[in-house]
Image 1: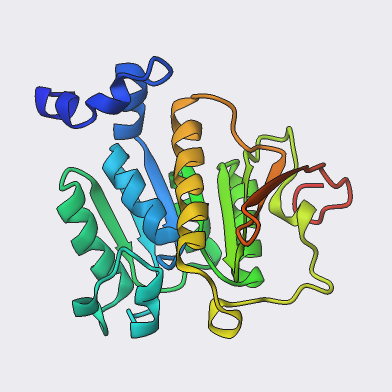
Image 2 (image 1 turned 90 degrees about the horizontal axis):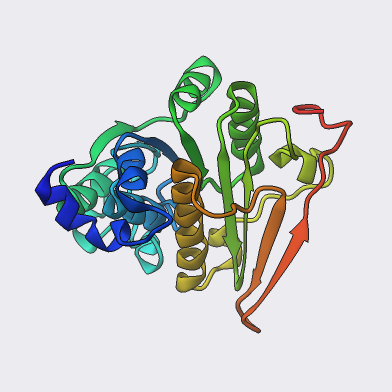
Length: 245
């Protein structure tokens, strides 16, 4: 770490729980962010600003006018651009030292498994159960920690699955049967709510990468922004889980 980096990240390095050693872990780390919408946008910006050395950005959509209300990594001039390219422009301005890999198509099968296995942490910012299930299965198979978030209307949730055999995976919480995908385009969402959840995802990812503090592993945090109340539920491993059971 050079003098420029010591100055750039000085406010983090001052934290005794992080210090120079923790900052170096961030610089050496790779985070895979799937989805550059309301959740992935703030998460990517905070991870880049915090000094995560390599961000792999995955999204196959283009920026639309309706995205700009909450997807703060994109700007009005980006309408029509692929989201990964729009995100690259913002992140390079924020921290040109962060190495960026752009994937402008849907990851699935062996390619998804490869990128998950190469990452130190995965942040799921997708908006449908099929994608979330596929990401979870890949994380379980490779033992890669997963930081999962979701937000709709005035509500949000976030959880961590370390996938080290000591706790549940995402499929222990959600089953195939009876689940309905809910999207912001159909139900609406308050802009800062996704920012809150995305910021927590970034915080948990940093804790995983540095070994700092206690993560949300085995816990689900639920936000009711209308009343501004948080609830935390303990999650248990499902012995009958088709993925990790």
